[in-house]
Image (cartoon, rainbow, N blue to C red; front, side, top):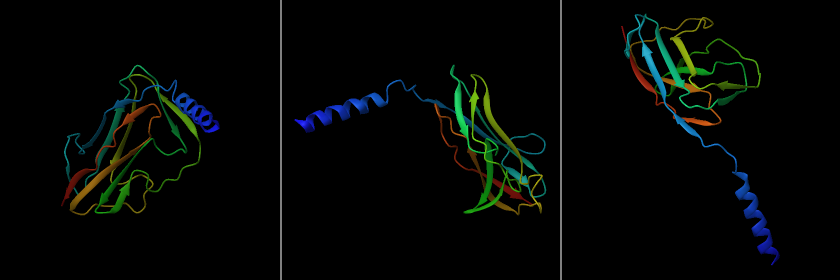
Length: 159
């Protein structure tokens, strides 16, 4: 009898845990490249800078929230070749720990852009050699919306 009462109390407690939770919405992200002239492409010359960008628009009628643990950018890009990270949009920078909550209003965006492959703080500057690379994006996660992680985007560097 005592076991049945404990099971009943446990079941009631568990069923009450999820009450009042808003449904999680799904959003679509855009991950892109531009060359120095603003043309969408995935082939670049080794001496040229290029832009990597990422956008998620709040297409809902709800305020979306994400949490920050530090002062780093909300969107970070990495360039890899094979299993090695060659460059990132935060190379040469350091960040302080400042926890905060950020809200994205309906119609607003979470976005980031990087003029790759260097940052102003990177010393020495890098020149990508000819070859095939991948761009990766890391971004803040909303507590009340789901955004699929975009797959790495391949690109080519030519002489």
